[in-house]
Structures are given as structure tokens and as C-alpha cells.
Length: 59
Image (cartoon, rainbow, N blue to C red):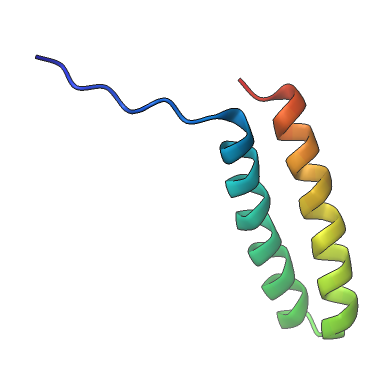
């Protein structure tokens, strides 16, 4: 018997990708000496756009 991965909804996948990139972008910008407020805003906007992109173009 071959076990398969469970099906994951596209919205959940999109959200997980967005959160992953939000964390990477935020901490990357903080390490590069960007102010925390600016890093947070840019990361949140980018995460939202990544969510929309993966949601509409993901497989």
C-alpha cells in the first residue's frame, strides 16, 4: 500500500509561503540595519503580494 501526502488547500499553501517570506524578509532587513518599523511594513506588504501571487498562480 502506497501512502500519499494529504491534499492541502491552495489558500493554506499561500499563507504558509507568505509567512515564510515575511520572516525571511523582516529579519534580513533588520540584519541589514533597516529600521524595524520600515522592515515590518515592507515585509507585510511583500507577504500580502506573495500570498496573492501564490494563491492565483500556484498549482
